[in-house]
Image (cartoon, rainbow, N blue to C red; front, side, top):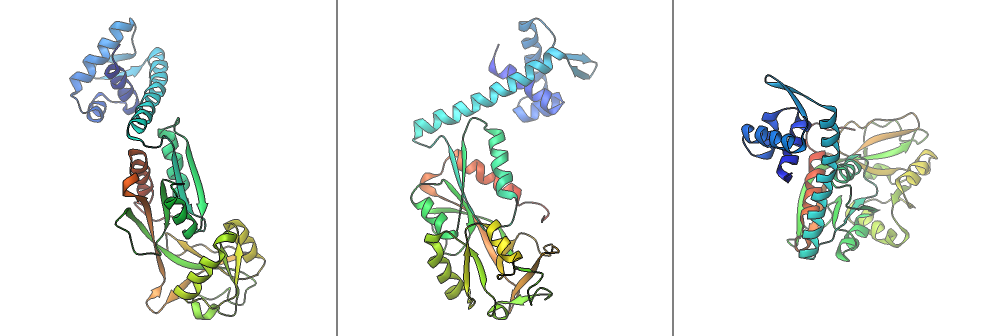
Length: 299
């Protein structure tokens, strides 16, 4: 039994077609057919029941392909791990992501990566922008998903993902709850709720005051959920970014566009990792994450 025979069989079963299996495996259709027949001859029973130009999968073939697919996945993970050891790469993946981003894409990318490599541990750490920056400088994470606040460094791979639209979330009980849009200057009399760890409060305070021009009293929450509960209790407003314009408003918390002189404000989002620590795991995760942001915008 040869490895390529098992790979071809799994490709035929997964694609439902000898033609598509051949395209996936970068060989001719006749090569796929011949190798699958050779595998059946060696095993002594049918895996695929052929009827003219079509086929059905036999019960034995279904069992064989299912088990073989799992083994092939483990073999690919073994190859990754051995290559990582040989090149001094990590055999796990650690992802840092912005704790105030409102979206599903990072979780979906982690899920997709874990499904491809079930034997490679994936760790995810949430943090504020500066916390994430310190984590990757200390080699505590391999790749970051975060907004841009600094000049892009040539020492990093800087992969632009999208521009996020800026909003503020306010309680329905807030005096600004029914505004169509709000400028930063219109929020000066309301407390601003920011998400940051205790050690990052001063960094976030400086950024929002000196760079973004917020003059509000600043309150801090440790998570997005805690911040949203503070908003619901009408303790202030919370800035967020969304991938799409026209964010939904609920009956308790309303989401209002944050605008400047040129219209609704935006924030750039990137996937970052150091060039000197790039490896196939990081690059594959970045490809998966980028794919989550392609196509139509979703809330």
